[in-house]
Length: 379
Image (tube, rainbow, N blue to C red; front, top):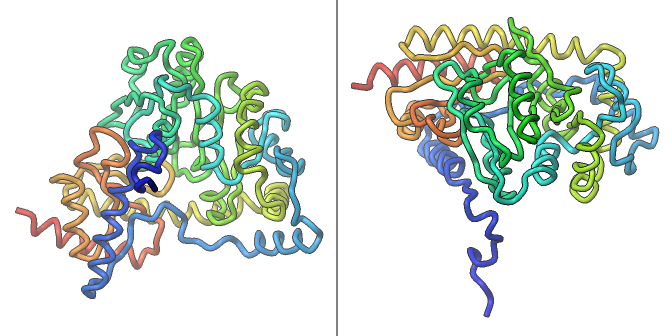
């Protein structure tokens, strides 16, 4: 007898739910059907198109024959450029099909079934899914209200049963940048426990006043990064990892049957803009605009009475709201603004929402006015 859909699904996926994302999507779609104009502040990607010079470089690369498989590790020009930027050996760099593939590779390579996976909260929602896919036991570390890691609290939850610690700075959803000394201490404590630190640094070039410090080059650290955010290339799928050779070899076992290699022409285009210095110009232009938007949204939210930590990087802010975040988000849709409830980002986030300011100032002005109208109507 043919099994039902629920019976067909592997048990390791049984604890993974898309219900919150699906629920908010359906709420927004239903509002649109009723004629409500929705400004979407839930999107986690730059609103800029990929720079024309990168597009041209990619076209040129395709004409030159960069349309085939590359080495699993990526083309030499790109690995060399990445290695130079981070001060590591190119042999410690592997290009992946986006940072998401790199995170999945690391998860399957190092999360032992039944082992502990430490995730500071709030944090990128996919880390929780990776841990569940690998049948790890999630241990969350509360960082509220400052969003900085308390080393004493971290030390208390660490032991020999921990396989991976996920870090993400600048942070999604808060925009917070952790102190470099704190992050290195986390790496040291983790190494003493035999744990791998996965440092997701995808937003490392999008910062305002405080420059984030990379953990690249540390023995027990896998740095995950890419160009989706920094060069507005979300659809191009170019990511990379930096790690010790032993760690890289383990991830290669997954990568060679998962991502295989990133698109050759895209790799070549990124390599060219990195070596020419054009990439820095592109990032600077976006960050200049993001800073204006950050300041505007933060100031407007504070005027409305919201508690919020001023973002130091990325393009998100994570304010505290006066009711359950799902209820707040659903009611706000009726006023024409879509935001992301805080619950998917971990425990203790029931009264937080994520706002992405990766949209135009015109949209942000309208959105803040609508949020103000909604908040003023709350009794």
